[in-house]
Amino acid sequence: MRRKNRLATVAIALGASGILAACGSTSSSSSTTTSATTTTNVTVAYVPIPLFDPLYVAMAKGYFTKAHLDVHLTVVSSGQSATTLAATNRVQVVLGGFSAGMFDAINQGLNFKVVGSMAAEAPGTAANGLVVANGVVPAGKSLTAAQLRGAKIGIDGGAGAAGGYLLAEALKPYHLTLADVNVVNLGLPDMETALANHSVVAAYPSAPFLSAILAAKDGTLVSPARVNAAVVGVIYGGSFAKTPAAQRFFDALAKGAQDLQGSAQTSAANLAIIAKATGESTSILASEPPSIYATNLAPPVSTLDAMQQVYLTNGLVDYHHPLSASAYIDQSFANKVPTS
Image (cartoon, rainbow, N blue to C red; front, side):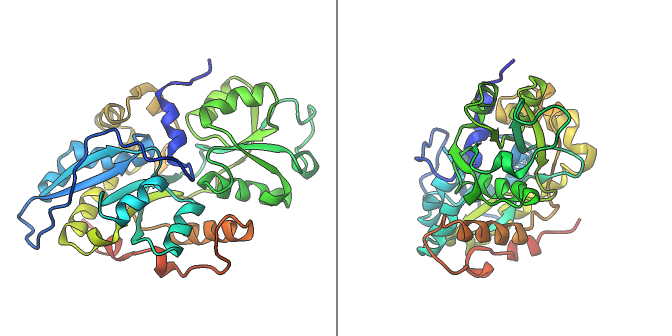
């Protein structure tokens, strides 16, 4: 059964572009103060998918309220499209995917930084990966570089999206780069059909679309994502980052991540919270591979550096020399998260 339901919103999180489509509750400004006991309004732009579970847990368990924060959630079409809002303080926080467009925006002087990570790939699981259409590789044979070279490969958001970086990693064992294949922008919900009718040779789906494709036998997983690679995270607008509320927000969000460690991630209480926030059933959520959340939500420095290098190498950004990590990452909030 092809699942083209509300889980299609997963596609948005990894997109490199898109027009902002705010459709949730919004807050027009951030009422910042120097008092830790005065309630501060914080607007968070996000995509309602399971990659951002610490947000939902922190909201449901009142961690933001306890930190004297009145958090308003506003749904957006992609994290990348919301960075301009964060840079201009129309929202204070963005939870979304990293992309070539994000690096370009930093290079152009937009005032925001990556301050934390969200979901990363857990060992021994396959929440996303490179899938080749069945029939491309003869029975009993292994996939070869020749079968991928010049082939159409579907990525949600195109080569400049987070999926572009993930595909570049998946191609390394075949000694190929993005320039060696024909990357096409293909929405995650459409990948199963495209693989089934061979309109693409391969695609890079993520959960729950990956499991649906494999169950329908429309494709074969040939290269799962690299373990611990977090291509989604937390972005702060520059103005908000300077306020006392910024650390309080981060601490509360990290507390949500701490509640999702190990088997606690699939506890009945947490699954119920996530299901309510994302509109998905607890059974589907429980069946999908778990994610890793750092207990202090530290920014994925090495992954971000690798992503920038891929975008530079493939001409997907408008500059030619790598930006220093300090230009787009602020680790100070993660460093101050309470350890207990």
